[in-house]
Length: 272
Image (cartoon, rainbow, N blue to C red; front, side, top):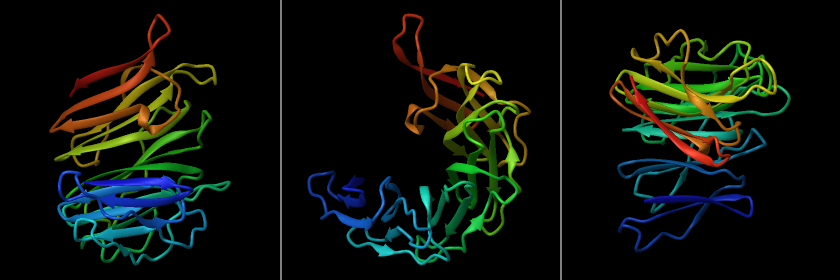
């Protein structure tokens, strides 16, 4: 088991190999907050925010977290990074913030020892933010949003079928003319992929929000012409307010909304 946390603005990770009875001494691997973890077998990966763009708060362990090694990457990792693993393959993506944010991605195919040069996914999509990841074998997905907080926002996804060697052009999958929020999660099962996020039902800032899901059944080659509408939702506040999982072509989604009596409730939906 692994736990990462933010302590006084720095990121730490600790692990246990005996069902949580004993834990390693916490290891400080990042000078920024918002730590993220991925693990597969005896391999683990830790990443955190870095606002300098030149540092690389990306570490890997090949011995259940007993020791950690700093990853060698071509270019620093910036803000809001996410990381995910499948077998010996690992994918990390992040945004750059500032006035015109970009989304980058890097991949390792040897359990974190070496990484591909960082690749700019959003070269044709100005003002890109909040990447979220999915991976299964050599197939990788990165979803993100553009122009947050405006009717010009859109939801995008790019797919790699060769473990990050090449990437498809960014594909718009959201509602045009509406405010699309950040993707809360990408779920992958075989050739099926599901992406969940919130979007405003109308083109005004007072329009209510709803939870929506996009779906591909052919490894991201084609997506639904319009997202599936799950139901009303609370306004965007955090990625932790919704999640999607899948098994084969069936997806399972949870999200939050206010009931008719004014109370907050968790909602669930499943379907093809």
